[in-house]
Length: 297
Image (cartoon, rainbow, N blue to C red; front, top):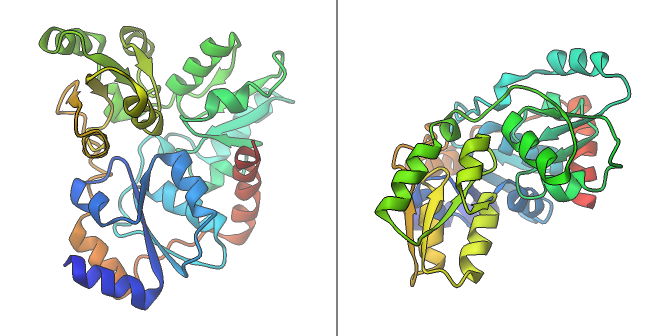
């Protein structure tokens, strides 16, 4: 199967991008694996004619927006994001009407139509750096993740208007589970994703994006880590740091949508050239402004 995928990649002049939460078998077949920020950057550097995006739908939309002249495929079009679906363009327009003059900032985990309504896009890896460039008294609407928004607001000492969205997978993580993991692995450094609730973030040692966790694990003198995010990341962490130990806070932190892509569906996507992700031009142009504003920083 791997040989067939490699052959089809050459025939299609394709590149495979995969998110850190993908199945280990899919990560092994990818040309590049990363978090939302890493993948957004890589999507602007692709020279291939075809991008096969192994992730959830909004990620493939972002790749299509950044590469209007290329074919973007998603192996499973039903791989959605519940958080992204917690707000739509009409709801965001209504929120903006309640807060005239406020800058609309969206987490990359949002649909193309929501990005099109925003001034700038952020990822969990760069949200603090991007929002630090705003004047301290700037009025900000942050959608859709209330937890990432509150995390950044607290770090910068500011107040944002937060939409009550959240990640159902990270919502399963509790401070109690972190306490239990510390008892099982004394001395291990606890890393959690900023999509987690505040009490979970406060119970951890580090609050990092998945890309941030990988960078921290590489440079940290610690030899053992407790990882508070979707368990797919452990494959990359262990692969890049063979001399270190990584434990999930709980094996239940599984995003069912991220796991919909399989090596079989990846092969079918290349063989049948499906399913193509197309963003309406008007929406894509407006959404690209928000993404470009982020990448420029």
